[in-house]
Image (cartoon, rainbow, N blue to C red):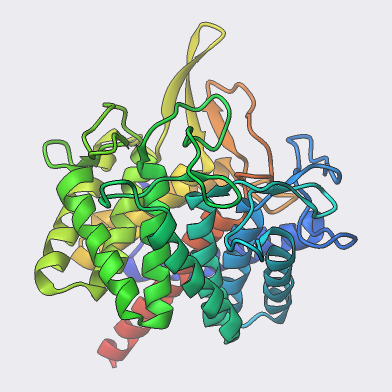
Length: 413
């Protein structure tokens, strides 16, 4: 018998609320203690798997923007003054280091002294900026952050729509001239439309509308929701097409369950702003995606993995961010359907993460876990590894579990 079957729903919710909140504090204190660049401002660019901080490593805008979002949300949810200070410092850092005062938008990269060295503009960074700035505004009340988020929204809608206006393109020069290649990293296939990028447009527009109630943002968010339903969602599988051409025809059969489960919970969360017809279809597709991803997950642990060959042997590989999105997806499916198997699987996934991913003496999560054991790759902190995924999952689910417990308490009275 699995452990969760011995717990009541109330006990699972209480454990989730307390343990997930504790995890938020553990992760953010790691970033304050080990990654805060007190000499130059912002955060150090890299911590390797041997726990060495590379203080002279270049800095990429993705990490501080995600730190800004994480500290802002935590300050708002938990009222921690240290997080408020960190959010304020990080807001100043991303503006002073990465914001282009001449052409608007965020640069891609600086050196460790915070001097921009790669002034390309990526849609990916701009929408992360919208997401982070709107959350910082919600936490701090600083109107300048909301103004900047609104400016970025206008830039994205003006500069980043593709030629036929159906979707968005990703890569630009400093002055917003379109680059011939859309990839952000060397060694990554060049594609016209990458769902991994468009998901961040979805989350950014939902976040900005949540905190601004802007009609133009709602219109763009609804248009994007319809686009996902009509062009990017495969009704025969319940999963998203990962890569598409300029006309939004699929170009690959690759699946990425982590992105599918992320789409599912983001769509459920945003659906409260839609009319009844769009809300109904959005939620139906999202639950179908969750259920399809569940069939691809590890049955014992409710976790997501992929198999790769290492030295001639098949090795299961679990990544940290997939598990964070799995927790969020299962939780939102539970909230919208009331079906407790989603809650049980959310708890089961967390137990695996707590046992396998947590770096107990430091407070952060590993990049990945492998079975049979082959060590782990990636790094502890850096360009693509910030507190964001783990903190988002832990904070949102902890807060919502608390609300659900409060509702149960009111009903019981």
